[in-house]
Image (cartoon, rainbow, N blue to C red; front, side, top):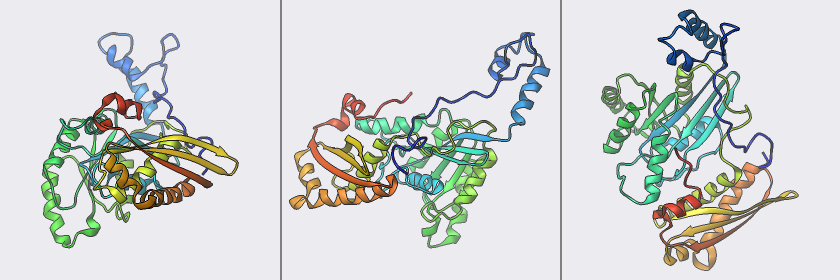
Length: 356
């Protein structure tokens, strides 16, 4: 789909309230919040409340927000991409590849699920500003969702999982506990005692063992989501798949290729900023600036005679042309910006802001 296609890369509308019911022509429309505020007055009666509840239950459509949370590198972005059937969130073997909240919207018939992909929650809060930002992005996703998918590894529960678990409990909403990566479990019998152990930590959660990479049991996970999704109208157009712009996705694709090739050398001290994004006939022209913190990192990124940066550009361009369905001309530059990852003002200028 072309990046300028209508209804595809657009900003999300504000969350709409449920349709109001006016039980009496002489009274204003009735919302549940009004009933709560006036439950001790005689403005509305219990009959009015019954009328409002009946109107909500009559709705055949289902819609809600579902947060996907877990410790770093547990497979959250892989799960989101598998559910949507396309790449929206980048992935790599390096923890903390995802840095932002990303909405993935799946609409089928009368059901719309808005998945919220999040950075991995980690324990160390006193690290660099970019790590504090990622923790804030992950934690804030739990504030206003209808359901939580808490992802953990197939055989190991550690302190980071316990840290996430405490935050999930405080969310006060239904929880699905997704035990990921069961496809690479050598001894299947070892899974049962682990499931029992995990269930004791979250007695009210629904357990679903899955393999996000292969798609095994992901359909069962989606069915569990559907069963707990509230009634309501769609928040987004049915053809919209994310809240992020084409420029954002483009920058993320470039960063993914760098993380996959140089994740050990440039773990978090690298980011990408799109400086040019223009369609000229059948060709999409993209210019991207890659920021690093030290001159040595710049040399590593460029490589011998520019071989490394050329390979990164080729790999990113393949994904872009597949996504945008047009020819892409991609230009990459590398610039040293010392200390950007621990400078809150610099982070805001690079798009690391906007959290409540």
